[in-house]
Length: 187
Image 1 (cartoon, rainbow, N blue to C red):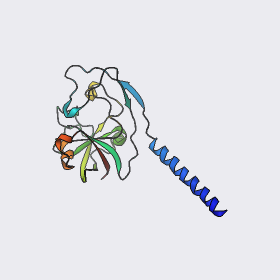
Image 2: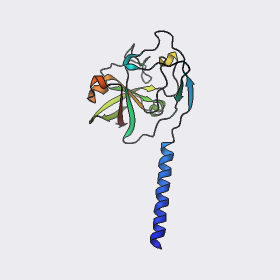
Image 3: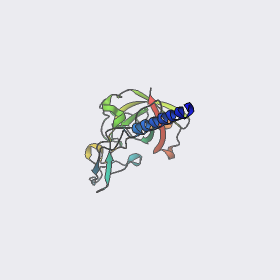
Image 4: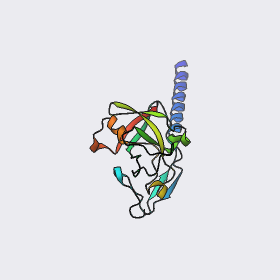
């Protein structure tokens, strides 16, 4: 009888852990939607294969990102932080532009955390390598499809938007730059 009670206790504990894990994974839900508008001619910079908003298309927005752990899963994307690049205006953290030759990143809104990670380093791992990069900007998950966001859609909630230097340091061949599954952590 003790084994049966102990087995029931273990099952209850496992169910509680599974429910807790599901709740944590579901803690970041979409916060809204925006409709795409047609960018004025020449106003959406498509450098690095950046998307432009499409008229009438609905885009999901987020105020949060998945929880940060010692090895947070994310998608690495390519961005230029230079003046005239597809990143748009100067970086949020220091109101400056940054060379594509420096390892810098923008984080999705939730991970950017209101600027609390500004000018701090994160470690990005993929392709059997790691690189340290400085957070200089937000990849806005709450807004998009307007002049302030270069007429690009809102960022998904799991993005580390990186300069060319990060891609090079990870040893990714240039013809494969665009999107890459990675993990990252605070440095």
